[in-house]
Image 1 (cartoon, rainbow, N blue to C red):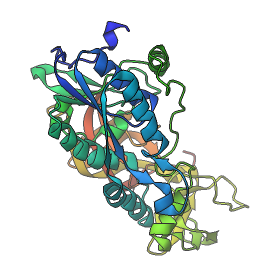
Image 2: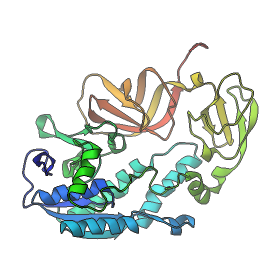
Image 3: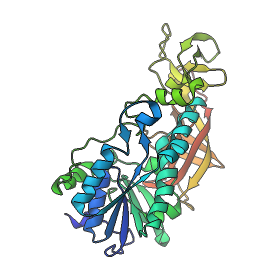
Image 4: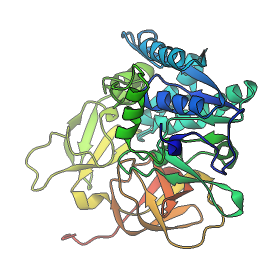
Length: 374
Protein backbone atom coordinates (compact mmCIF):
# COMPACT_ATOMS: atom_id res chain seq x y z
CA UNK A 1 0.00 0.00 0.00
CA UNK A 2 1.39 3.39 -0.95
CA UNK A 3 2.74 5.19 2.18
CA UNK A 4 0.98 8.40 1.19
CA UNK A 5 -2.30 6.68 2.01
CA UNK A 6 -1.28 5.78 5.53
CA UNK A 7 -3.42 7.44 8.17
CA UNK A 8 -1.43 9.96 10.17
CA UNK A 9 -2.33 13.12 12.01
CA UNK A 10 -2.27 16.18 9.79
CA UNK A 11 0.41 17.84 11.92
CA UNK A 12 2.87 15.10 11.01
CA UNK A 13 2.88 13.18 14.32
CA UNK A 14 2.87 9.42 13.78
CA UNK A 15 -0.15 7.56 15.08
CA UNK A 16 1.75 4.31 15.60
CA UNK A 17 0.95 3.06 19.08
CA UNK A 18 -2.09 5.34 19.32
CA UNK A 19 -5.76 4.36 19.29
CA UNK A 20 -8.05 5.29 16.39
CA UNK A 21 -11.81 4.88 16.30
CA UNK A 22 -13.19 4.56 12.76
CA UNK A 23 -16.83 5.26 11.96
CA UNK A 24 -17.79 2.23 9.85
CA UNK A 25 -21.03 2.34 7.85
CA UNK A 26 -20.44 -0.90 5.97
CA UNK A 27 -19.52 0.91 2.76
CA UNK A 28 -16.27 0.86 0.83
CA UNK A 29 -15.12 4.33 1.96
CA UNK A 30 -15.22 3.75 5.71
CA UNK A 31 -13.88 0.22 5.22
CA UNK A 32 -10.78 1.56 3.47
CA UNK A 33 -10.34 4.15 6.23
CA UNK A 34 -10.33 1.30 8.74
CA UNK A 35 -7.73 -0.50 6.64
CA UNK A 36 -5.52 2.60 6.45
CA UNK A 37 -5.83 3.12 10.19
CA UNK A 38 -4.87 -0.48 10.92
CA UNK A 39 -1.94 -0.28 8.48
CA UNK A 40 -0.60 2.79 10.29
CA UNK A 41 0.27 0.65 13.30
CA UNK A 42 -2.41 2.23 15.49
CA UNK A 43 -4.80 0.17 17.55
CA UNK A 44 -7.96 0.47 15.49
CA UNK A 45 -11.54 0.09 16.68
CA UNK A 46 -14.47 0.12 14.26
CA UNK A 47 -17.75 1.60 15.46
CA UNK A 48 -21.08 1.30 13.65
CA UNK A 49 -24.15 3.25 14.70
CA UNK A 50 -27.42 1.46 14.02
CA UNK A 51 -29.56 4.39 12.97
CA UNK A 52 -32.65 3.38 11.12
CA UNK A 53 -34.97 0.43 10.58
CA UNK A 54 -37.39 1.05 7.71
CA UNK A 55 -39.67 -1.75 8.75
CA UNK A 56 -40.25 -0.29 12.21
CA UNK A 57 -40.58 3.31 11.06
CA UNK A 58 -42.58 3.24 7.86
CA UNK A 59 -43.88 -0.28 7.52
CA UNK A 60 -41.31 -1.42 4.95
CA UNK A 61 -38.59 -3.98 4.86
CA UNK A 62 -34.94 -3.13 4.69
CA UNK A 63 -32.64 -1.12 6.89
CA UNK A 64 -30.00 1.58 6.92
CA UNK A 65 -26.90 1.35 9.08
CA UNK A 66 -28.34 -1.98 10.21
CA UNK A 67 -28.81 -5.45 8.78
CA UNK A 68 -26.53 -6.00 5.81
CA UNK A 69 -24.53 -2.83 6.42
CA UNK A 70 -23.64 -3.98 9.91
CA UNK A 71 -22.74 -7.43 8.64
CA UNK A 72 -20.51 -5.88 5.97
CA UNK A 73 -18.76 -3.66 8.53
CA UNK A 74 -18.22 -6.62 10.83
CA UNK A 75 -16.83 -8.75 7.99
CA UNK A 76 -14.33 -6.00 7.11
CA UNK A 77 -13.30 -5.66 10.76
CA UNK A 78 -12.77 -9.42 10.97
CA UNK A 79 -10.70 -9.34 7.76
CA UNK A 80 -8.52 -6.55 9.19
CA UNK A 81 -8.30 -8.13 12.64
CA UNK A 82 -9.70 -5.12 14.47
CA UNK A 83 -12.35 -4.77 17.16
CA UNK A 84 -15.84 -3.76 16.05
CA UNK A 85 -18.75 -2.46 18.12
CA UNK A 86 -22.35 -1.66 17.20
CA UNK A 87 -24.36 0.95 19.12
CA UNK A 88 -28.12 1.36 18.79
CA UNK A 89 -28.92 5.01 18.10
CA UNK A 90 -32.19 4.47 16.26
CA UNK A 91 -34.40 6.43 18.67
CA UNK A 92 -31.91 9.31 18.83
CA UNK A 93 -31.67 9.41 15.03
CA UNK A 94 -35.44 9.30 14.65
CA UNK A 95 -36.01 12.11 17.15
CA UNK A 96 -33.19 14.42 16.06
CA UNK A 97 -32.92 13.85 12.31
CA UNK A 98 -36.07 12.28 10.86
CA UNK A 99 -38.49 14.37 12.93
CA UNK A 100 -36.63 17.55 11.95
CA UNK A 101 -36.73 16.44 8.30
CA UNK A 102 -40.53 16.10 8.46
CA UNK A 103 -40.96 19.38 10.34
CA UNK A 104 -38.93 21.30 7.78
CA UNK A 105 -40.94 19.97 4.85
CA UNK A 106 -44.19 20.69 6.68
CA UNK A 107 -42.98 24.29 7.15
CA UNK A 108 -42.35 24.70 3.42
CA UNK A 109 -38.57 24.47 3.67
CA UNK A 110 -36.11 22.07 2.03
CA UNK A 111 -34.06 20.26 4.68
CA UNK A 112 -30.62 18.64 4.50
CA UNK A 113 -30.77 15.69 6.91
CA UNK A 114 -27.15 14.69 6.26
CA UNK A 115 -25.94 17.93 7.85
CA UNK A 116 -28.28 17.50 10.81
CA UNK A 117 -27.00 13.97 11.27
CA UNK A 118 -23.38 15.15 11.19
CA UNK A 119 -24.22 17.89 13.71
CA UNK A 120 -25.87 15.46 16.09
CA UNK A 121 -25.57 11.70 15.94
CA UNK A 122 -22.28 11.46 14.04
CA UNK A 123 -20.21 14.40 15.23
CA UNK A 124 -21.59 14.63 18.76
CA UNK A 125 -22.69 11.20 19.95
CA UNK A 126 -20.00 9.37 18.00
CA UNK A 127 -17.41 11.74 19.44
CA UNK A 128 -18.54 10.78 22.92
CA UNK A 129 -18.20 7.10 22.09
CA UNK A 130 -14.72 7.59 20.63
CA UNK A 131 -13.54 9.50 23.67
CA UNK A 132 -15.06 6.92 26.03
CA UNK A 133 -13.05 4.30 24.14
CA UNK A 134 -9.90 6.31 24.78
CA UNK A 135 -9.27 7.15 21.13
CA UNK A 136 -6.69 9.72 20.10
CA UNK A 137 -8.79 10.61 17.07
CA UNK A 138 -11.93 9.71 15.14
CA UNK A 139 -11.55 8.85 11.45
CA UNK A 140 -14.37 8.92 8.90
CA UNK A 141 -14.79 8.19 5.21
CA UNK A 142 -15.82 11.72 4.24
CA UNK A 143 -14.19 13.20 1.16
CA UNK A 144 -12.76 16.38 2.69
CA UNK A 145 -9.29 17.41 3.80
CA UNK A 146 -8.03 18.45 7.21
CA UNK A 147 -5.15 20.86 6.70
CA UNK A 148 -2.96 22.45 9.36
CA UNK A 149 -2.80 26.15 8.63
CA UNK A 150 -1.16 29.16 10.23
CA UNK A 151 -0.77 28.92 13.96
CA UNK A 152 -0.94 25.10 13.67
CA UNK A 153 -4.72 25.31 13.58
CA UNK A 154 -6.72 22.61 11.79
CA UNK A 155 -8.67 23.82 8.78
CA UNK A 156 -11.36 22.12 6.70
CA UNK A 157 -10.70 22.07 2.94
CA UNK A 158 -12.41 20.65 -0.11
CA UNK A 159 -11.45 17.18 -1.30
CA UNK A 160 -8.96 16.85 -4.12
CA UNK A 161 -11.59 15.04 -6.20
CA UNK A 162 -14.30 17.69 -6.85
CA UNK A 163 -16.80 15.03 -7.90
CA UNK A 164 -16.60 13.47 -4.43
CA UNK A 165 -16.18 16.58 -2.27
CA UNK A 166 -18.46 16.54 0.81
CA UNK A 167 -17.36 19.78 2.46
CA UNK A 168 -20.82 21.32 1.96
CA UNK A 169 -22.27 18.77 4.39
CA UNK A 170 -19.64 19.45 7.05
CA UNK A 171 -19.88 23.23 7.40
CA UNK A 172 -21.32 22.86 10.92
CA UNK A 173 -18.20 21.07 12.18
CA UNK A 174 -16.76 22.88 15.19
CA UNK A 175 -13.10 23.66 15.72
CA UNK A 176 -12.93 21.22 18.64
CA UNK A 177 -14.37 18.47 16.46
CA UNK A 178 -12.01 19.29 13.61
CA UNK A 179 -9.04 19.02 15.97
CA UNK A 180 -10.12 15.44 16.78
CA UNK A 181 -11.18 14.29 13.31
CA UNK A 182 -9.18 12.66 10.53
CA UNK A 183 -10.28 12.36 6.87
CA UNK A 184 -7.82 10.04 5.11
CA UNK A 185 -9.75 9.94 1.83
CA UNK A 186 -9.77 13.66 1.12
CA UNK A 187 -6.68 13.48 -1.05
CA UNK A 188 -7.74 10.39 -3.01
CA UNK A 189 -9.96 9.79 -6.05
CA UNK A 190 -12.75 7.27 -5.55
CA UNK A 191 -11.35 4.73 -8.04
CA UNK A 192 -8.18 4.48 -5.93
CA UNK A 193 -10.27 3.80 -2.83
CA UNK A 194 -11.93 0.86 -4.57
CA UNK A 195 -8.54 -0.37 -5.76
CA UNK A 196 -7.24 -0.44 -2.19
CA UNK A 197 -10.33 -2.33 -1.05
CA UNK A 198 -9.83 -4.88 -3.82
CA UNK A 199 -6.11 -5.22 -3.09
CA UNK A 200 -6.93 -6.02 0.53
CA UNK A 201 -9.66 -8.47 -0.41
CA UNK A 202 -12.42 -6.51 1.28
CA UNK A 203 -15.84 -7.85 0.32
CA UNK A 204 -17.24 -4.32 -0.07
CA UNK A 205 -14.77 -3.32 -2.82
CA UNK A 206 -17.50 -3.25 -5.46
CA UNK A 207 -20.39 -2.32 -3.18
CA UNK A 208 -22.48 0.47 -4.82
CA UNK A 209 -22.46 3.94 -3.31
CA UNK A 210 -25.58 5.15 -1.57
CA UNK A 211 -27.45 7.53 -3.87
CA UNK A 212 -30.28 8.68 -1.62
CA UNK A 213 -30.97 10.03 1.83
CA UNK A 214 -30.11 7.03 4.00
CA UNK A 215 -33.57 6.66 5.52
CA UNK A 216 -35.29 7.14 2.14
CA UNK A 217 -33.52 4.53 -0.02
CA UNK A 218 -36.27 4.45 -2.65
CA UNK A 219 -36.38 8.25 -2.99
CA UNK A 220 -39.98 8.49 -1.76
CA UNK A 221 -39.34 11.03 0.99
CA UNK A 222 -42.94 12.26 0.76
CA UNK A 223 -44.20 9.04 2.32
CA UNK A 224 -41.94 9.59 5.34
CA UNK A 225 -43.20 13.16 5.79
CA UNK A 226 -46.80 12.09 5.19
CA UNK A 227 -46.59 9.47 7.92
CA UNK A 228 -45.10 11.85 10.49
CA UNK A 229 -46.83 15.10 9.46
CA UNK A 230 -50.05 14.18 7.57
CA UNK A 231 -51.06 17.82 7.18
CA UNK A 232 -48.08 18.41 4.88
CA UNK A 233 -49.80 16.30 2.23
CA UNK A 234 -52.95 18.47 2.08
CA UNK A 235 -53.93 19.70 -1.37
CA UNK A 236 -53.99 23.39 -2.23
CA UNK A 237 -53.93 26.01 -4.94
CA UNK A 238 -51.17 26.65 -7.45
CA UNK A 239 -51.03 30.41 -8.03
CA UNK A 240 -48.96 32.78 -10.15
CA UNK A 241 -46.98 35.74 -8.84
CA UNK A 242 -50.11 37.89 -8.88
CA UNK A 243 -52.08 35.34 -6.85
CA UNK A 244 -54.23 34.06 -9.71
CA UNK A 245 -55.21 30.42 -9.30
CA UNK A 246 -53.74 28.25 -12.05
CA UNK A 247 -54.52 24.79 -10.71
CA UNK A 248 -54.23 22.44 -7.75
CA UNK A 249 -51.34 20.58 -6.16
CA UNK A 250 -51.39 17.31 -4.20
CA UNK A 251 -49.29 18.47 -1.27
CA UNK A 252 -46.44 20.94 -0.79
CA UNK A 253 -44.20 18.06 0.31
CA UNK A 254 -43.73 17.22 -3.37
CA UNK A 255 -42.12 20.58 -4.20
CA UNK A 256 -39.08 22.72 -3.52
CA UNK A 257 -37.96 26.14 -4.72
CA UNK A 258 -36.57 26.02 -8.26
CA UNK A 259 -38.43 22.83 -9.20
CA UNK A 260 -40.01 22.61 -12.63
CA UNK A 261 -41.23 19.03 -12.90
CA UNK A 262 -44.57 18.08 -11.40
CA UNK A 263 -46.30 21.45 -11.64
CA UNK A 264 -48.39 20.24 -14.59
CA UNK A 265 -49.89 23.57 -15.61
CA UNK A 266 -50.39 23.93 -19.35
CA UNK A 267 -50.97 26.98 -21.48
CA UNK A 268 -48.19 29.12 -20.04
CA UNK A 269 -46.13 31.11 -22.59
CA UNK A 270 -42.93 30.06 -20.79
CA UNK A 271 -41.91 27.25 -18.41
CA UNK A 272 -43.08 27.61 -14.81
CA UNK A 273 -40.92 27.01 -11.74
CA UNK A 274 -41.66 26.82 -8.03
CA UNK A 275 -40.89 30.29 -6.68
CA UNK A 276 -42.26 30.04 -3.15
CA UNK A 277 -44.16 27.70 -0.84
CA UNK A 278 -46.80 29.14 1.50
CA UNK A 279 -47.66 26.34 3.95
CA UNK A 280 -50.11 28.37 6.07
CA UNK A 281 -52.29 28.94 3.00
CA UNK A 282 -51.27 25.61 1.41
CA UNK A 283 -50.36 27.58 -1.71
CA UNK A 284 -47.68 26.84 -4.29
CA UNK A 285 -46.46 30.02 -5.98
CA UNK A 286 -45.02 29.53 -9.47
CA UNK A 287 -43.49 31.82 -12.06
CA UNK A 288 -40.91 32.13 -14.87
CA UNK A 289 -37.27 31.35 -14.21
CA UNK A 290 -36.34 35.00 -13.78
CA UNK A 291 -38.59 35.08 -10.70
CA UNK A 292 -36.14 32.71 -9.01
CA UNK A 293 -33.33 35.27 -9.07
CA UNK A 294 -32.11 36.10 -5.56
CA UNK A 295 -29.76 38.91 -4.58
CA UNK A 296 -29.27 37.98 -0.93
CA UNK A 297 -30.11 35.39 1.71
CA UNK A 298 -30.50 35.72 5.46
CA UNK A 299 -28.65 33.05 7.42
CA UNK A 300 -29.29 31.68 10.90
CA UNK A 301 -27.44 29.31 13.24
CA UNK A 302 -24.15 30.37 11.67
CA UNK A 303 -21.04 28.32 12.40
CA UNK A 304 -17.52 29.67 11.81
CA UNK A 305 -14.40 27.54 11.51
CA UNK A 306 -12.39 30.09 9.53
CA UNK A 307 -12.28 33.11 11.84
CA UNK A 308 -10.20 36.08 10.85
CA UNK A 309 -10.34 35.62 7.08
CA UNK A 310 -10.09 38.81 5.08
CA UNK A 311 -10.49 38.71 1.35
CA UNK A 312 -12.85 37.39 -1.33
CA UNK A 313 -15.19 34.53 -0.56
CA UNK A 314 -17.47 32.25 -2.51
CA UNK A 315 -20.76 30.71 -1.40
CA UNK A 316 -22.42 27.42 -2.21
CA UNK A 317 -26.19 27.28 -1.64
CA UNK A 318 -26.92 23.71 -2.78
CA UNK A 319 -24.87 20.55 -2.52
CA UNK A 320 -24.48 20.24 -6.31
CA UNK A 321 -24.14 23.97 -7.04
CA UNK A 322 -20.87 25.64 -7.92
CA UNK A 323 -19.55 28.19 -5.40
CA UNK A 324 -20.27 31.74 -6.58
CA UNK A 325 -18.66 35.08 -5.60
CA UNK A 326 -20.40 36.70 -2.64
CA UNK A 327 -19.84 38.79 0.45
CA UNK A 328 -21.21 38.37 3.95
CA UNK A 329 -22.31 41.11 6.32
CA UNK A 330 -24.13 40.87 9.64
CA UNK A 331 -26.01 37.67 8.95
CA UNK A 332 -26.81 38.46 5.33
CA UNK A 333 -25.15 36.75 2.37
CA UNK A 334 -25.05 39.03 -0.69
CA UNK A 335 -24.44 37.47 -4.10
CA UNK A 336 -22.29 39.39 -6.56
CA UNK A 337 -24.61 38.19 -9.33
CA UNK A 338 -28.22 36.98 -8.96
CA UNK A 339 -28.38 33.37 -7.80
CA UNK A 340 -31.23 31.06 -8.81
CA UNK A 341 -33.17 28.44 -6.89
CA UNK A 342 -32.08 29.47 -3.39
CA UNK A 343 -34.36 27.55 -1.01
CA UNK A 344 -35.05 28.32 2.66
CA UNK A 345 -33.99 25.34 4.76
CA UNK A 346 -30.90 24.67 2.66
CA UNK A 347 -27.42 25.60 3.82
CA UNK A 348 -25.17 28.35 2.51
CA UNK A 349 -21.52 27.38 2.90
CA UNK A 350 -18.75 29.96 2.61
CA UNK A 351 -15.31 29.29 1.17
CA UNK A 352 -11.98 31.06 0.80
CA UNK A 353 -10.53 29.16 -2.11
CA UNK A 354 -10.68 25.51 -1.04
CA UNK A 355 -11.00 26.31 2.65
CA UNK A 356 -14.38 26.08 4.38
CA UNK A 357 -14.96 29.21 6.46
CA UNK A 358 -18.31 28.09 7.83
CA UNK A 359 -21.92 28.62 6.90
CA UNK A 360 -25.49 28.82 8.07
CA UNK A 361 -29.06 27.87 7.31
CA UNK A 362 -31.01 29.94 4.79
CA UNK A 363 -34.06 31.41 6.54
CA UNK A 364 -35.21 34.00 3.98
CA UNK A 365 -34.23 35.28 0.56
CA UNK A 366 -34.34 38.67 -1.15
CA UNK A 367 -35.58 38.70 -4.72
CA UNK A 368 -33.30 40.33 -7.27
CA UNK A 369 -34.66 43.13 -9.41
CA UNK A 370 -34.39 41.97 -13.00
CA UNK A 371 -35.69 43.28 -16.27
CA UNK A 372 -38.28 41.28 -18.18
CA UNK A 373 -35.59 40.21 -20.66
CA UNK A 374 -33.28 38.89 -17.93
